Image (cartoon, rainbow, N blue to C red; front, side, top):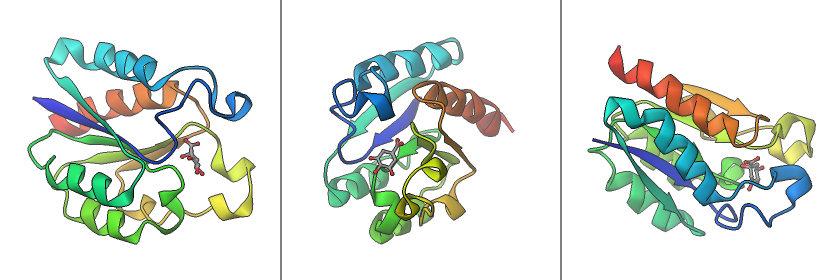
Length: 143
Ligand code: DQA
C-alpha cells in the first residue's frame, strides 16, 4: 500500500532554495518524516518530484492504485490546468500542501486552480505541513 507524495517544479532543490521562505529541510528529509508518520499503518511512500507538468500528470495517472496523495504543485498551483484535470480523475483523497503561507506572499500566489478539488489544504507550516497531511489522510482513508 502506497501513499503518493507528489512535488512539482523547484521542490527537488529544497534545503538550498530560498531557505528564508522554504526552510532548510530537504525533500529527502520530508520523505522520511512522512514515512515515519504512516509506518505503523503499513503504508509506504511513493515520492515523485518532477519539473514538468506532463510528468506530474503521468505520476497521477500511474498512481490510481495509491491510497491517497499529498500534492505540492509549486507554481503549477497558479495555472496547472492539465494537472488539475488529472487530479479530477484521481480516485482517492488528496491534500494540497504549500510550505510557505501563500496568502502572506505575492498576489499571484493567492489562488490555486487545484485547491477546489482537494480534500483540504495546508500552507505556511513548512515541512510539518506534509506530516499533518499524511496524518489527515490516515483518517480520510479509514473513513
Ligand atoms: C510553494 C508555493 C508556490 O507559490 C511556489 O511557486 C512554490 C512553492 C510552497 O510550497 O510554498 O514553488 O508551493
